[in-house]
Length: 434
Image (cartoon, rainbow, N blue to C red; front, top):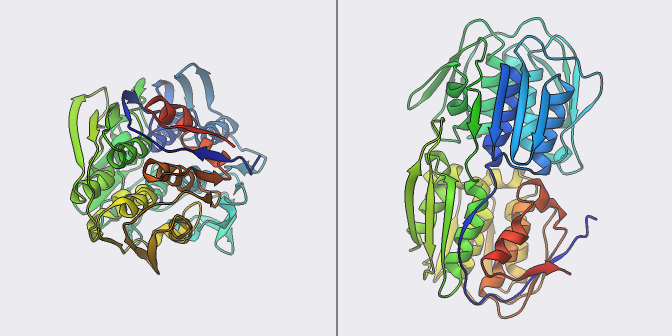
């Protein structure tokens, strides 16, 4: 099944009003915090993907009672002090978010646990999360920095003041989740904005958390379920539609009910700097502090730019799309300060350099990015490098190619955007199995 291949044919124009599946980052955190709170939480529009099902499975193993029906999930939480000894290895599949967030939770438990994943996840760095947790008193052991992660039970974690030296929402979230099990105040200092879904959702669950420009402080204690949560459409998934609309001729798309979290807007800001025609409308707010609205995108003549350092962290998951946008833009685009891309599901810098070269695009690789000259894309056979975002981004190259683009190893798309092919075809693309 890993050789599952998709072929994307030439695109004429794209049109439609669509919604994308629920936000992956928010779905993970909704399940986890519902598990850690007492009482029932009803979650609507969660993402039905392999990564989320891993979070659900582990939450069930730890004692949460979870029921799924259509797009509704009901979670009967355990509370902070009542998680169950798993007595088995916890397998997180391909989900880096799940394993890192659960490291924070399990580091605070009295029982031992072992966390692992698939071949790709077992290559991803875990010491970045283990380090601050050890500073809190956790007993964690990694496999030369990677999973499996072995955690010894503890009676108590300590509070700490920690400077976030790697701009990662997953590290920050692991510390915050571990801090829930402490008695005092933990403070995280950061100079770079990263996704703040955990902070927002902790507020929704009545946690004692305070956020200002440079610090986050949290006092441990019980969580109170808000009873109902609506998960907005995933902006990362919407970004594939955004780019397709920008680089296809005579196209206009409207994406509805999508999350507009300011810490996730980096890709859109980069596209606007590249001369993209994008309109943002904040439509409504459900019972959450997350912003929700619609995005209208129209065909645009993109221009090459130097991607600002300040936008890298908030666009890190969408950077494969920036590579494709640069290939379609006039002139040169320079991407730097993005070394974090080398530690994703694949080495995304290497993967995109190899694939753009195969597409006949001039590209020079840096240690922390690349310099790309826009040009004429020529369809060919590409590899996803077992990375869902690389696979989907490269399939969009057919929007500017006269000949088909074929990408092998696309089964991984199910981890984050299982309906990608169907949604893209609904607006005018022609993607099918080889």
